[in-house]
Length: 380
Image (tube, rainbow, N blue to C red; front, side, top):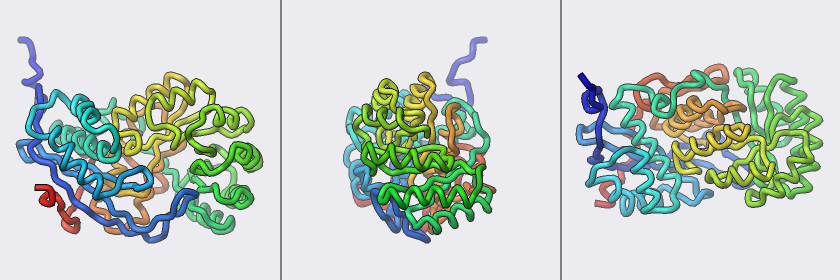
C-alpha cells in the first residue's frame, strides 16, 4: 500500500502559527566587552516564542545589536506591527516559503528574521522529536572547539588571558585589534610566547586598518605564527581586500564584508578571501547562512561560525547550524555566554574548551522566562 506523507508521524502538508509572543530580558556582563568598533556593557535582548495550534512553542533570540541596525524595541515593533500579519492567520507550505514571504514584506531587519526562523525550526524539530541539526542536513561535528575572544587590552594582560584560556582547555583564541598597530603586534607576540605553538591564534581588526597598515601589521604578526586575520580593512572594497591577501602569508577571512551570497561571490571572484565568517543573525537566518556556506564550499573557501556575546538560546541555534555544515574551520565563536549573568536559557556549556551539540529535541536547551518581561500585550 502506498504511503502518504500525512501518514508519517509529525508530517504536515501545511502548518499554521496560532500565537507569537515576545519577552524583554537583560543579560548582565561580568566584564565590559571592548572592540575597535564599540564598547558595551549589559545586553538588552528580545526573545520570541512561536506556538502552533496544539500549544507547542519554539523559541528564538534577537541579539538587538544597535551596531547592526536593530534594538530590542525596534525588533519588537517590526515583529508585532508588520511581520506578525505574515506569520499568523493563514497556512504556510513550509518554513522556507514563510521566510521568503517575510523578506517580501520587510527587506531589512535580519536579526529578528533570524529569531523567527530559529523559533520555527525549534518548533518543527520539537514536533518531530529530533535535534535541530537533522533539519539542516544532518550532523557533521558532534563536538566543536570553541574560539574565545580576548578583548582590547595591554599585551601583557592579553597574554595572561590567553594563558588562562589554555589552562581551561581552549585551543583557539581571537585577539581584538585595530586601534593601535604597535600594541597589536606586541599583543600577538606576547600571546604566542605565552601559550606556545599549539594554540590557534586569529586577530580581528573589525575593519579598522587602512590597506597599507593591514599589510604591514599582518606581515609583522606572521613572524609569531598568526593563523588567521579577520576583516582587516573596510568591508566594501573586494579589490583592496585582494590587494592585502596577495601581500601577506596569513589567511584572510571576511566578516562584515559578507551579508549575502552575492557579497561572498564578489570577494571570491576578486581572489580576496580564504574564509568567510557567518553570523546567522547578521545574514538573516539559517537558510541564507547555508546558501553562503554552500557557495564557499563550491569555491574551496572555508567557513567559520561567529557571534556576539549572547544567550545560550542564540548560540544553540548557531551551533546546530555549524555542526551540520561540512566546511567549517577555526573552531566556533559561540562560547561568549560564559561571562553573562541572568541568561534565560540553560543546557549548553563549554567543557574543556569544547561545545557538545545538544541531542535533545529542537534546540536542546531549556528556556526559563520567569525573570523576563512579556511585551506581547503592548501591541494588542
